[in-house]
Length: 236
Length: 246
Image (cartoon, rainbow over all chains, first blue to last red; front, side, top):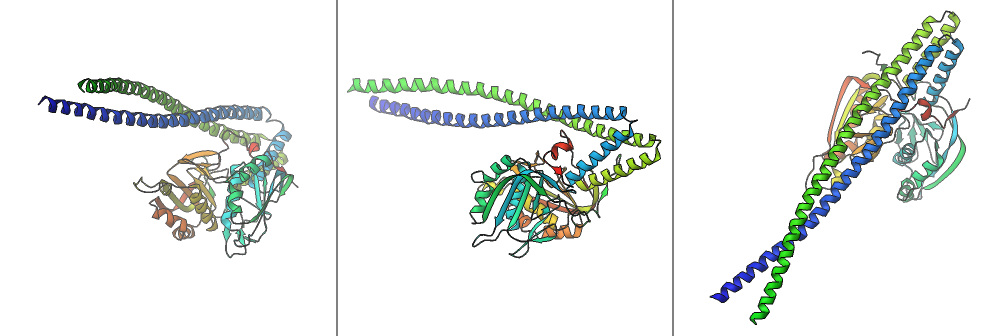
């Protein structure tokens, strides 16, 4: 009788012991996972906070600048020549921004040609251009077609790509004005755009240059179309 | 024999005791730590929300100041007594405003379509990469809209420019260096019929719908596409590397 009781009690103790061991193990595992997740969240939040702080500071600076400029404009109101110069500069800057004048600057020239099996498609050009944009390119052209906001890329047959309503053929020469180092790094990152495109065996070259010239967009209403748009008047 | 068993039992109990206290301690410690981090993240979230409010307010003030500039310009032109000079001012100013309109710096309206995209609801046993919208999807759709004759496009109110990147970073998309979260709302001005047709024929839209991405498209006679806001930057900063060639 006593023997059986002893066996039972030992079994019971061992059982509890086993359960506890498993529980302990699991909870430690669980906890480390949770802390890792929590840490990740905190890191993201901190990063966001830092970005917002920077944005906040930049906006404050810009607002102060604008106010100062406006006060200056008010005080210089009597000087007609200054005012005309100011307007002319703004007009020129806006034209440059809109792509309405040819521009010159440092940047990259990327040449891409068909591989032995695959042809260069619209999506390949878009891939490169999106990467250049992400690396702060300020002006881009493909085979002398200035890229504007509504520029499309469309492969029609295997032999050409439509850009701004024009047929372009290989080799495609993409020019981008911006920080040459930054753009080159983005393109040539390991596993980046160039690596991806080289798997198709395209012939690609990337060259830095200090004076790239990018032509203006045609300003005859065929590329920048506005016939369906009207301004939203202020105060509406 | 009996002595041996006692030793075994003794050591089992010792280990059991240690485990019990260890378990107790870690549970307690973790509770404490969790409480601490949640307090910390709450503080962070509060700070973030406050900054976001401030940023919005600053953006509004910048808008107001830009309007003030407009008013000052108008007043200067009206007060100019020299008629030749006044006419010159008007010509340049009108041309500048026309180019601002072409450049996407002003709010515009017209007929078109609105596309809303939202990530699929989480499903078990499904590759999570298939449930979310990728920059690739957006890039292809935007290109298809441009092919169909779009004249102005915005995503979540951010005007698309020649230099607008579409880069996904986690659950957000970056456009014009600014981040936007789902749902993505794409406003497009153009011929609603051809835009609609392009979207109905879009392989990408069909593939997204297959993956249960929530897609809705509707056409409208009056779509508003906001102008690009230079925000914290001067326009000059966006063309700092560009020199006009005459």
